[in-house]
Image (cartoon, rainbow, N blue to C red; front, side, top):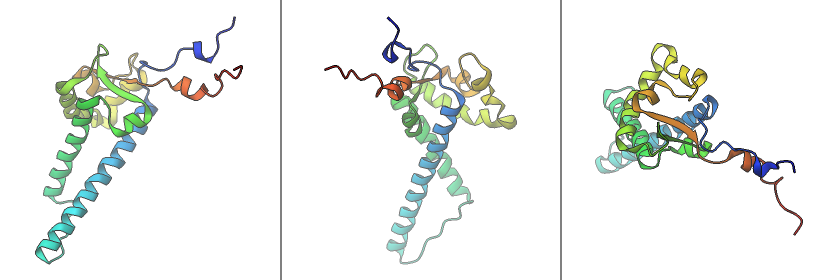
Length: 168
């Protein structure tokens, strides 16, 4: 008997690759920036209604930069601590876990978020581990003791329509 699509191993639990992680990051950057800009626009509108004068924020001003940095920290740290994934990661089917496969937890999520910018230093060399490492861990993963794995069986989802039993 030859193995069918249901018998083939899927991607669940395998270390996530560079493309999946990069696309998830791009989605997260767009979502978090969009939400921040909407919040800023709402705050401007509310302030202009209350004061009667239009409020304009300097996008390069120190207050906006600090507020955006705090928002990004909260977006990533909370998402990774609460359920191990951000919106983009959930969309791509990847999740942050502890090195041993358990939950990442609050402490690892905070350390990972704080170490994340370090991976961008030296032209992004901190991400080289995702491309060449056996367990696909970036610098911030090594520092925080985390790994990123696939959470759903992509092969089964892709081949699911072929595996239907039409004999009934």
